[in-house]
Length: 190
Image (cartoon, one colour):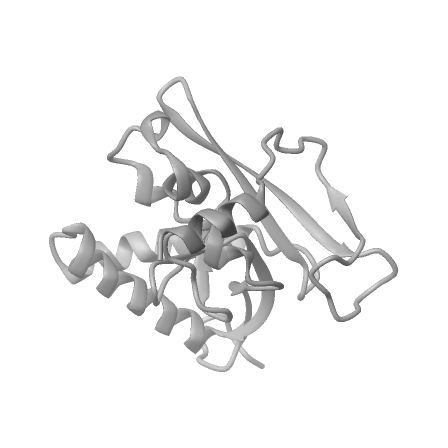
């Protein structure tokens, strides 16, 4: 019998997923597909989200954080993993917190990384391969996150970039993104 602390025990985690190349246009730094992911709201805790513009604003509003690259992904996928994978992902995030976010030491960084992964795991109470989307807002001085699940309409199938999905959750973000305009702007910047 496997116990929750056993390296081989199964857990559910979030991984970044890229169904099409749009994340590379939407975000300044896109996560690599298949990275372990957390919601990443802590990335905006010390700033004023109301002052964000462009790609930084897109990351704030709809990005999951890939912990290895510190890149952003529009969607995260619920996957089955081993507890040893979770521990390794916590270690990667803890090292990132020390290297890039001035965590005072590895113990404090590890505690913060464990909290991030515990929250991400709380979103995984759906079948594996379910996709999760986030909509983040800044209200009354607080960052608020709302999550939606996306699943194939008639059971698990390979997802294409424009598959029809059932969406759970009543609130749809009112913002629209003009990907064609973003691509043109990105090409003119080169």
